[in-house]
Length: 540
Image 1 (cartoon, helix red, strand yellow):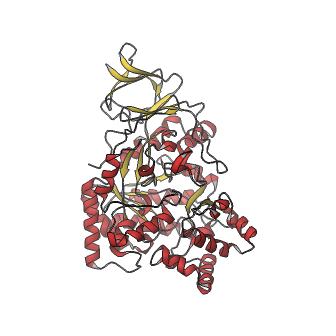
Image 2: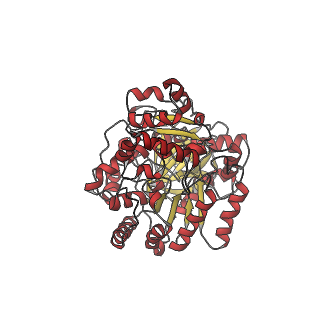
Image 3: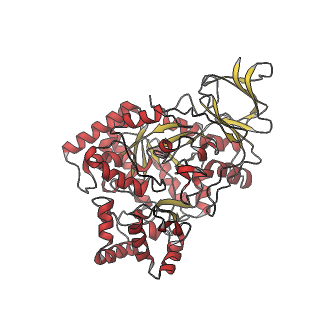
């Protein structure tokens, strides 16, 4: 007797190059059988006629570290076919936390991770173990695969100091990495465009990576620049992984800004050379030509030294404002200059604000707000940051569609949203977020598979399931086969569509009829259920 059988669909199992007609039987939290199950009794039958039955999608790059604590339903991801979220990306994490630096981390996360959440942030834990225990005691709808954020490790040890770590500080940070590995973290992430990661060197990062080397777990990085200094930043990431003796995964691979647009062939050649030299190298991408970051990230790194409060203090100084403008207009070696990468302030749009006054800014460009306020765009940025206490998210149009298409279509790419789990209602529905939080997977299936025909639906499934599972080392997820955990997504290839737009982003994807997490439906007939059956996954 099966608990669930999914009948009449075409199975794209994450391995095959051609979907095949079969039924999928589920018993408990595992896939029991795949085949002709018409005569096998089941407590529940899901009709998948005309639909694709696929492994649950693994979002390789998310920032749902706190949103899954505040809203366990993970609605935007469940409606988009996701059953597992990888958190702790870009070196931005909510643990470890030292009591004496808790306020610093909270202020920092307000500018980077939880700027859209309209509540007073609390971090009632110190260690990764304690944080993950919170998720285990109150499970979300999706599984969670944690990375250890190097930025959080450095902040806990050194705050926002730009100094090189002493041997004693490095020893304590390495011990923190080992503790997180013992806890089951899948790898170490860095964000070298963000503080305090920007202060880290190849030597610092490779030293931490060496702790991972015996485990085979990987180093994942938001490289130091995705625009003017992209290729130097790629070389730095490769050198870090090689020196540390670990696999490398590059987050949201892109060509951002006029100086690198159109250079996908050069980019792919550089990655292939590293592979030919023996490096285990992978990457993910989101299917949009527009990114999302914090407005504070547009400020040069020296302005952030000491933390968010120090940044805001500096922004009140007219002489420092002049210096910041000079650095944005002229650039700094090795700095990801987001404002210049966007080429015009018409390409920077306010996505979130925390004050009542700030709600009028949502959906407006910096250029438009500057015009309304009668100030230049630089003064406009400074004043918005001060008004919103640094907690401002922006949408930044930096890429060419053709480059994004080429990276998404690359035979080795994986898909990550770079977005939190959000909702159309409740605490996770504030702001005017990037549509990728709602529609990434549906956009791949609708735009890239059905409309542009850049690759097959079976290839799309691999990009979103088996390929991420292999990178993470998840042997029992990401592929539909007997004995694996029953994470399953059912969608209609003819109607699946992202409905979220930049103008109206808070819209769930269409075309997903069922999403099953550990054997329990989280989405059924296109509607959310009350099941919260996600688990904290741990590397083995």
